[in-house]
Length: 434
Image 1 (cartoon, rainbow, N blue to C red):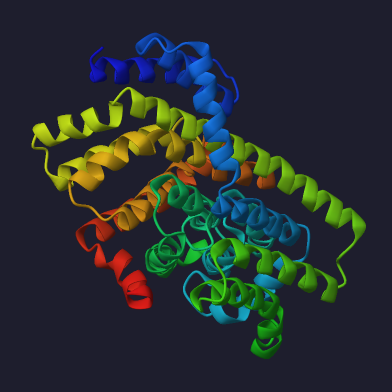
Image 2 (cartoon, rainbow, N blue to C red; image 1 turned 60 degrees about the horizontal axis):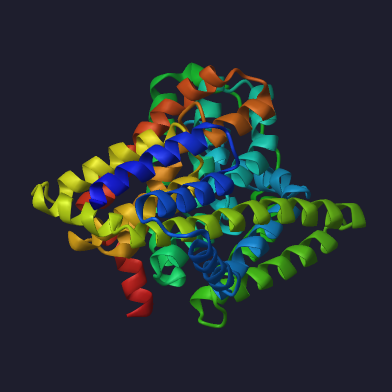
């Protein structure tokens, strides 16, 4: 059967099974097995052999060990008062800027992203303090919620990032280089957010209170920031010094987080149990999706879908920038309906071959893909950051989405910038590792 017909068959199966509401990993398994049976007429025993080999290969992947560890690290932090300390620590440094304490959403999310690896965890941890404090102090609700929705998504881009680990495993590229590649684009997007907040508040003073009262000294603020800065330095220092791989650095980060929680006198058996259970649930979900995605990738390889899609795109002479524009639109549409991990694992077997054929660096494409996934975190009806903020504040999802829209546009502008100047992504990995 023609590979394009096979690709269309796979697409129909994906829409059918995932649209029926089944769990993502079950839907992917059903797509793969049905596709192999219908398109290639594989017997059940051969499909079972393929799946068993993929299960063994995925289960023995050392790189994937980082995922449950980074998730556990974020679960522990979420259950401590580090978010309150982060707010108190950042407040004296941003209060005199136009926008005042709204910048704690951006700066706090940027810092917390470096110890979390998860967009939802970053948004929830920073937001559980800032949403209450900014409302109490009289800041504009839309600007406050929108900045949190935008900045919270940086948890996927600034290392350590769970989505980057997944991309690195699936695309077979260096996770350490991916982590380095995400730093400057993450700071670029954070800078765009802060600049927008300053311009809005400078041109419309009513968006912030005029007599901000922040009594904490900068010396005391640095003490409040010390635990988070320690964890950032511990994890990233272990990776970029060459002393640890990302998986080993994740273990170091968990140990450091347990030490910080103990020193802050917040460690308890209840915290340990709840954080472990939360990490187990999230890790089981992520790893099961990864196994199913590897099976789907192998099935599409048997059907020659990626190679023929790459050949078709090359034959259309769409050009590199045309391909990127087409993929950007494709990922924005996917972001309306799917979560970030599902987007990466389902699309990568099809989109990566034409990207490489067009001459793009797979490290650069990893950062591009993460940014596109982050855009999906801010778009209804399945924008996870929007739901997190709705749960924290009770504000209707439509109002949260409207508040996030300017920050969606700013991140889209950031995507355009790194596309025009790819060295923003590639310079740091080259400087550190070449």
